[in-house]
Structure formats: C-alpha cells, structure tokens
Image (tube, rainbow, N blue to C red; front, side):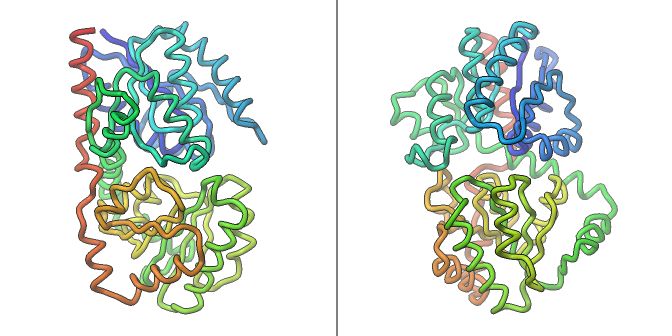
Length: 376
C-alpha cells in the first residue's frame, strides 16, 4: 500500500484538496495521511469539519505577527519530524502558499516525490502576488508530477523548460463546489436563507459580493476600491453590497474604516465554506481579488470583476467570464455600472462556460497517481 501525505494550511488549499483526499481515500491501494500547518487556523477548521477531514498531524504553526521567515523556518523544522514519522511515498501540495512551498521543500530534502496540484500558474511579476509567485516557481523546480488546471498553465511550465509529467486536469475547486452545493441541498431549504436574513442580507436586491484579502490590496489600493464601492452604493438603492471580512487585521480594519455606515453595504464576519458558496450562488456580480472565487463564480454564472492589476488566472478573462479592473476607482465603477445597467452585457458574461473544468479533476489526479505508482 502506497502512502500519500497531503500538506496544507489555508482554507483555499483545504477546499481544493478535499476532493482529492476523498478520492484517494477510496482507493484500496492508497493510504492517506493529512498534515495541516494551520497557516490560517480560524478559516481552516470550518472546511475540515465540512468535508469531514481529520488531520493526522496538526503543526499549529501560526503565531501573532509572525513573519514569513519565521513561519518558513518553523515549518521546515516541524515538517521534518512528520516525514521521519510518516515516511510517505509521495507528497501532495496545492497552489502557492508558504505551506505549499515548505511542504514541497521538505519532501525534496527527504527525497520524496512531490505532486503539485494547481501547477503552472504565473503572473510573471515576482512581487505580485507576494510571496506566492516566487513560491510556485520554487515548487515547480522540484516537483515530480505537475497537475495543471489548463493548457495555458501547462504551457507556462513548458516555457520554463519543465516538460515531463505535466497533466491538464482542470481545477479541483470545481469538484469542491459541486460537493458543497450537493451538501447544501440536503439541508433545509430555509436554513441558509434564514441565516443570511438574520445577518441583514436582503435577497430582494441585487447582491454584489465583495472579497478582499491579498497583501497587494493594502494601502492606496484598498482606499481606491472602497471609494468605488461607496459610489456604487450611493447610485444604486436596489443593490446590496456584502463583504465578508477576512481575519487579517491589515485588511479588516481598513475596510471597516472606509465602508462602515452605509445602509446598503453590509460587512459580515468571515463566512464558512457552505455559507459562502450559498451567498456566491445568490449574488448578481462578484468583485474580488481571490483566485478561488475567479474559478468558482463562472460555474454559477456569476460575472467577476477582478480587483487586481495582475492575475495568474487569465483563462476566465480571455473566455469573457471575468474582467480585470485593477484597483482604480473609475475603472471599477465603469465596469460595475456596465453590468448593472446593460442586461445584454451581463447575460453574455453570465452564460460563458467555465474554463477551469467540469468537476472531475480529483478523479483524474487520482488515476494519474495510481498509474505513477505502477511504475515507481
């Protein structure tokens, strides 16, 4: 029986790896181990509970005001013990977090093969997103199996002279979305509606879902974005803007400072995964700097305005289901108004098929792993 070690620490990683963990766990020839760093403890535990994942190792690395260097050094030290204990046949990491980087690095140090889920994404700006662009370049250089979401991400790797063991599988976030929506359907039809009504959400209005969490959104960017949001709130009384606040105080406190006090702007505490995808499904437009949201929303027919100046997910923009608006107030305002006022433009974006797959990525990844173990 081959041993697979999954290493992750943030909510997006957990969401995207959950379907793969479940699929691998169903295989009689595979033994699954799960190690979490708890890089985002507050947001991570809800996802683990929802997908019924029990970690075998919980490193609990995150400390208040911890630097990236401190997180990295402590992660390497504690993960070294996990590898000595578990002795896996392959390690699976996801995306571009510091956890993914240190998990891949320690696996390499132990001469254990690395399988990288969501491989090949590139913004081609080493400082944006920071430190994620550097992380994924490092990871790619020591990865044995590259599971890319699209042909474009595959070509990114080829352009860096990485040509072997690249498999285009789609994005596992779509698998997770399907699993999540199915679970929601099994709840009382009024459960989530009542939950959001108690928070003050008015589903009789057009819902604009706003999410912000990236480091590059700090400072002037968040102020400019907030000015656009306030203008939209003033111009459209049939719109309600809902912003689930990220726990990061650098973002949360600034958003509260800029957006508090408007009758049709609702700032909420962080939402757990099922509540978030329920709200996403009920939204009219999504404004976000989140990578996962850019991938999820097209599956639900929700136009996305990307609040970033660079993106490693150009597929949705090329397809037409997303528009990169950056952080300039006037550009955000113009594109939001265009979707609110122009029904034809809205319908065109809402009906474009998702370029990130159909929800079978975890099956494809598991099949590739099984084939890999036959010859290795």
